[in-house]
Length: 421
Image (tube, rainbow, N blue to C red; front, side, top):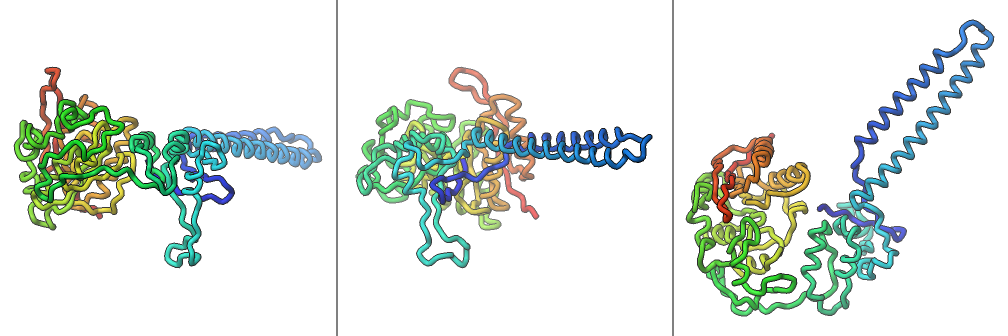
């Protein structure tokens, strides 16, 4: 979800309104215009014609009637606008953030209070104060936010990362900062890069609070998501062979994909892996001198800590947030079933446009084993991709047999972003 700045002057932080019911308002305006014209037509066509001396009084009377009707319509429009704005706030969570509410802790108030710049107005930006930002949906989770911001200042933070993740998954992103020290987890036994990429570490270096499993062995017998079945078993099994040895025509190999771009235009130097599981894609790329940022949350497993222990870059981020990167910075973006977002079609469009934004012209978009649960989903994704005008370097639709013995359709593709003018 996006974030909004909170400017507090009168003790209340109000979120900037976003147009949500514009179509309804347009219909209302159209209805008002038509009604006004009908009243005018009636008033002027009903004027008496047989008596000249009554013409002027009737004309004034008609104008008065029209004026009253117009005023009434304008008042109705104003009332409707206010009602629509209130409905918008209630639906989207942009209602006023009342800092006087007992549900708002003192730390939330302190964090949201704007801080004046010590030297006054900044000549470059024009701002006079620093204003904190939080996810707009935090206002709908005040109880959880209050728990998250309840701690001893300058003390040790509660072991509540799972509470913070719950807030993120409910749209409260970014989270407010806190004034406490994070819990320390000893990282004894870490080895240097590149040996770290495939080393087996003790379960003790990971935080298991808020997670059902308490060790890696438990995780390795579970299918945590469509892209992570046994993905924490980096010492054996298929995870060690991923991207260097395929099991089917949909499994593209890293060296083959890198060869599609070649060294022209700089080749592949940095990339972005969305929903990258335990970081195996980043590890394989690191062996080839390519830096990969892996975006993932810790849903049911310590993904971020495991990725970091391998010596590659984890990014704790949900897919509802705008990617915190500048435009046109990555040579490659890799994504699997993280692209399967639920909800309205516009949600996938927003995600795809953000992927396109951070990928440089000439860069590669690697769609890896995307499960097409039905023909409509495959068609919708295909049509969306075609809107971007990418060059299809490789496009494979194939079938696999799942654990239940049923056939499933998967789409894998390597696409090249065009140069747009």
